[in-house]
Length: 270
Image 1 (tube, rainbow, N blue to C red):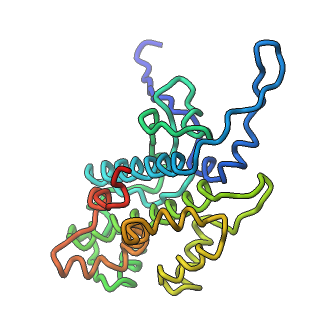
Image 2 (image 1 turned 120 degrees about the vertical axis):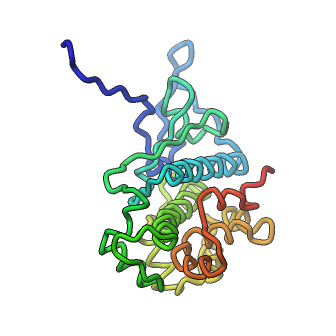
């Protein structure tokens, strides 16, 4: 109709990071059957090597940080980051290509953030009493309505903290080397991981590493995070304990950002 208002969105598919976060062998076993030229069922291609798949997962993580850096740069904080608020898409017409267990080409990957229903402006964060209460738990006294560096730093740190647990869950699920498709790995949802890290291991990353090392399915993940003198563990520690470090960083005249986290040696090309 004349005068109608149209909203046009880019179609990026419906595959979330949560759907990708399963052991590759399990997702590979669930691939739909393919048929040859004579109509016969043919086996799917073999799973790519673990190292190829790990590089692809790191590309997903890097793209997530680029997304987060962008929204922070325009003055927005997400405030509800989880695996289901991250969409995996592709440059091709088949948007599910990016979430295939066979996908390893990072240049074809596109990552989008969604679910901005709880998002807000960084400058408005201090107006939220619940936000100020959480900040006080980390030795930050933020005043109502104040537009200050403490408020911005803590709002950014909350997003980094949430995304850090998304990354741990992603790695321990998608890169788990299970012996058979029906094998069940330990719980790796964000809530379970936060309880482990806080209540069981008292925020000790070394103890969490030992916990992961004790599970054979995570042997390769532990080795990956151990590379470059534990660069991966330091990277994850920097993110999930971002809130704890805000006060100390501010005293040193620093602020941790998603862009800064991207400089970690963990993302060095191999």
